[in-house]
Image (cartoon, rainbow, N blue to C red; front, top):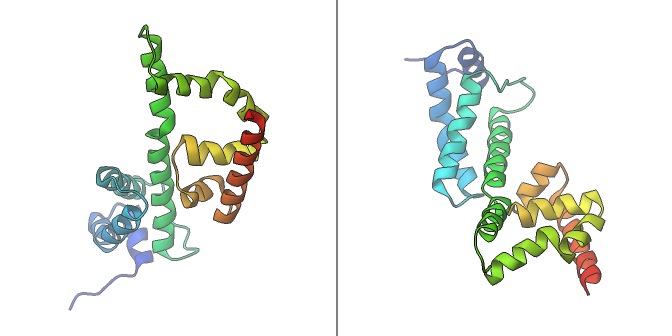
Length: 179
């Protein structure tokens, strides 16, 4: 009969280069982490990449478990942060840059490209600059980067309710500034 090692024992052994311990840890938690992340992101490819990056960080020693909580929570923190990073990289900001790049290389801009250019250079840009840094950060995360309220809360280190309140205040201030 084989002895089942605790999560903490597996993590310590994996940190010391024990490949079998790492594989056991992966078998225990990769399906769970994948399911949790898919609840936050519909793109299966992004989720699979994030799960792999999470476990690679453990294997390479970039993520160290300090034994101050359960392993699932620790893995969730690593995975959710990596998901936010992945979503931010592929978010609306990247699409804005692509649209502006196309705008610069064509004679006539589409309506969408004119609106996007106005975000960066027009009245909206001035109104955004006048927002407080806290309100601007929430709009950046939720509108520009396309994150959910929960993802923005994790990213900004504030409760989800605060994200919602700040987003509402920011939209109100923008409406007033643009009318």
